[in-house]
Image (cartoon, rainbow, N blue to C red):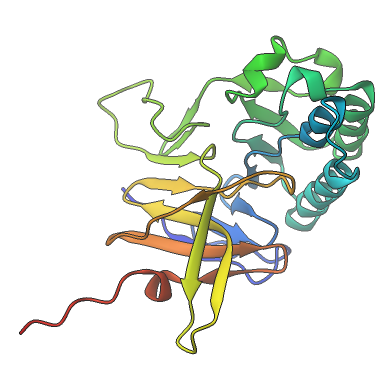
Length: 240
């Protein structure tokens, strides 16, 4: 079973008759359960760099949390699932970083928050209960969905078919328009029964996707989502 994936022009009006809605702001929404999905915020990454003596500017985490709060409000999300790597590293989880998250969590107190623990989150050990995260899980299986951090994470019930929604890869895409202009940006990637979300955090790197037949690709911007599958896939070779 492959759920219907579509694009919403605005986060405040997700279509009710589709399974997965791709939203401006690098997030996805499940209308049936009013669930907002994000991945790879990497809160504290900038602080990690600064503690290592690398002078990167402050403010990226605050802006990302503000954007997350706005998406929760615009979608009236009943539940927020973070698909891993909410935090970047123990070294970067300063008192200020944790306080910023706690304050944001308090402002969306009516929304359940579930963290699918990612490889970076594991470096923290136990997630502090004071942060207000309702559940920390390795995976979450809710047929037809299988929510994970790393796409290859196996099903709890290996004989069951599922549509996997994951993060971890930080996918990016470079394409050329018919006029020759080049565009490189973060993207959503769907292939078979897998959807990979772009990194939500502003201060994160990316992994270049090599387009292949069978993929669907969407450029993911704060102000919109654009289906670029036809532009991204290589043109078929003419037969002689």
